[in-house]
Amino acid sequence: MKKTYYKGVLGSTEKILNLLKAADGLRECVDESISGGSKINAIKEVRGVVGDKFRLREVKDAIDRYSRYLSFSKRIDWLHRHIPTGRFIIADDRKFIQRLHKRLFNNIKALPTGEELIRANRLYREWGIPKYKKGEYV
Image (cartoon, rainbow, N blue to C red):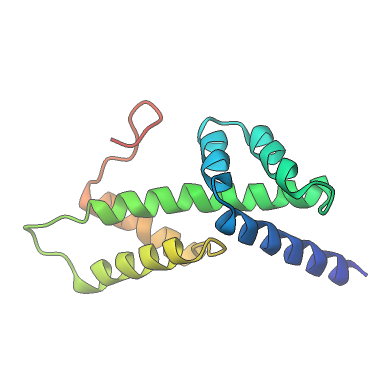
């Protein structure tokens, strides 16, 4: 019985994420709400569009997943834009970041694996890329 429940939740999460990808303006509103630190407002925006088609828990799970996706995609985008030039960079590291960046920005449902995050963090340290200043990217 639990397997059916989780399968149903995953299916509804994917449907909501597809709706975020397809609906005009909804994704921008949700991005602003999450960036402002208010997942509740993001949930209200999505609930306003989907109505009673999905349970509140399903919408919350989808917004939580999208919030993680947004956080990871911002960090990988930051790393991708600050790949050092003018010094020796291992071609495999450059290709890794480019592939990860492309995969995240082409698929809203994609999340990096643990190994990919560990490798990206290692590259942050090796390349000396600044992370945050006052809660924003520099």
